[in-house]
Image 1 (cartoon, rainbow, N blue to C red):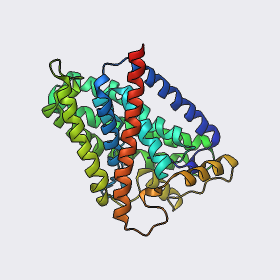
Image 2 (cartoon, rainbow, N blue to C red):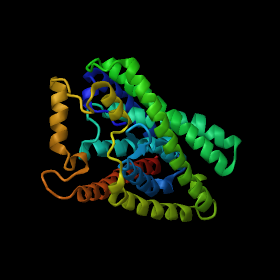
Image 3 (spheres, helix red, strand yellow):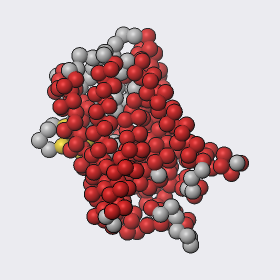
Image 4 (cartoon, helix red, strand yellow):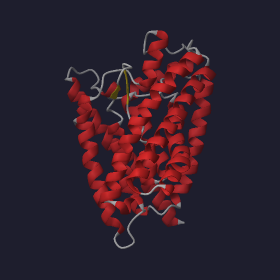
Length: 330
C-alpha cells in the first residue's frame, strides 16, 4: 500500500510529512523512557525482518490482486507502539530512498497510513483488549486478525482520502473506495493470520520477549529472538522473495480497475519533478533490481533483500542506541 507521488499533492504530502514528523518525535520521547534498554538489537532485526517480508506479495484468490504484510501490528506486539512506529519509519524511509518503493513526497502519507493505525490504534484498542479477555493462542489469533484487518482498512481509507484531497487524479472517490476496502480486508485477514502464527511461536518458545524480559535472565529470550529473526530476515529477503506474486498489490489493482493502468503520471509541478529526480539520483536498487545491469531478476531480488535488511537493521539499531544514550545521560 505504498503511495506514489502521482497520487499526492504538495499540500497533502507536506501535511502528512508534518504529522509523521510529529509522531516520530513523540515516539522518540516515549522510547527514551521505556523499559526496553536491552531491546535495541531486537528492534533492529525485527525491522529487517518486516522489510524483507514486505518484499513477498501473496495472491488474493479470485481478484487478480496481491498483498504483502505491513508489519506494524507485529512490531507493536513485540516492541510496543512507540518503538514499532520508529521501526516503520526506518523501513519505509529505506524503501523510498534506496529502492524507490513509494514516493518521497508521499513518504509522510505512507508512514502515517502504515505506522500510525496499526501501532497506535489497532494494537492498543483492539489487539490488547481481545488478548486481555482471551488468554493463549486463541486470543492471539482472534486479536491479531481483528486488529490487522482494522488497521489495514483504516490505512486504505486514508489512501483514498489523501488521494481525494490532493485532487491531482481523476480517480472517482466512490469507485476507488469500493475497490480499496474489500481487497484490503482480505489482505488484512492474511496478514493477521501470519502475524498470529509468529506471535504464537514467540509466546510458546520465547515468552519473556512478550513480557519485556524475564526477571531472572531477560537477556536469554532477547538473544534467542535476535538470532531467530536475523536468520528469518536473511532467508526471507535473500530467497523466499523469489516466489512473490507478480500480480499488482491492492492499491495498484484498485487503480488498474479504475484507469486501466497501474502507473499514473505525476503532475508536472516543480515539487513533483524535484522529488522524482532526487529519488532517481539516490536509489541504487530501484524496484529491487540492480540499476543498469542485466543480472537475473532473482539476483536483483537477493541483493536487494539482503542489502535492504542490513541497512534497515542498521538504521533501526542506531535509532535505538540514540534513545538509550539519551536516557542514560538523563
